[in-house]
Image (cartoon, rainbow, N blue to C red):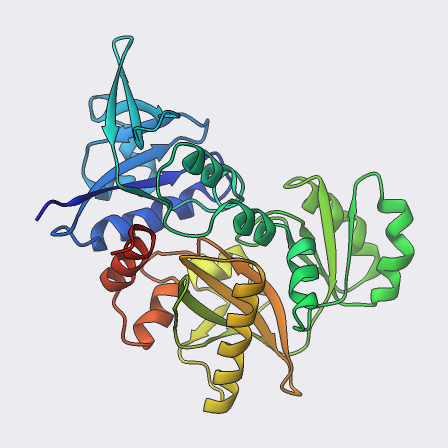
Length: 348
């Protein structure tokens, strides 16, 4: 059987570069080697693209960059060869690929930009396309579309730096506590929970370090739940999980170190509540035009209301990440979910 050649794109010029390395390492180690030939493509923090020919374990801590002999500069071919251009000695050589999995998190990876590049090049893309990726990264626009689909969203005010003074009255009307967030960022970078009015300006400045616009959301009582979704036409749902935060909120450190939070999988909720959360996740996934896979995050209030939070179109895929664990709870191994993801785009 001829193996399909799959480009696994990792790294990126994003604050979430290190998380991407961990996710890509898990993908490379769990890809079915009998069906697929992995083509690791790394993007440095400065935006340089390289074909990497070394051991997968070196991805951690950017060790893959230490041996120049294992790196070949590449770019995406914008012809119709469906491949990468290997750049050597002022010459170019085409390396064709059957599909690509962008294992990139945050800006310039999860926001539709790389997806657009791959689509222009005619390379089949495993995961959400340009529009869904861009919309899901934009918290305000995602919330508007989901609200129009009949799902409750948090009260929020969104503004740019120039619009801040005019937005202050609307922000005050939200009350406290609120979460101040960059409009387009992931992994909780730049997010602050504000419980006192004097903390607000500092939180806005922190958010503006990561984006040119800010959204301020009224805190939703209760706790966060998530649902893994896999597929495009026909969907497979993972078990619902629950985030128990013991200190502060579910920020970057809590997400990736495990300190200050506990993930309960499955969530400690009745079966009928889990089904309702899964149904809501499907409605959100469809409303935002998602495809391939995504993790839908919501809040469950003490009264039992399900409130939308956000969609991660390239969820964390590390050994401890929520998405593969939710799928595992539904009886789907990491290798199987990757095979289904690739098969979805290749019509296998």
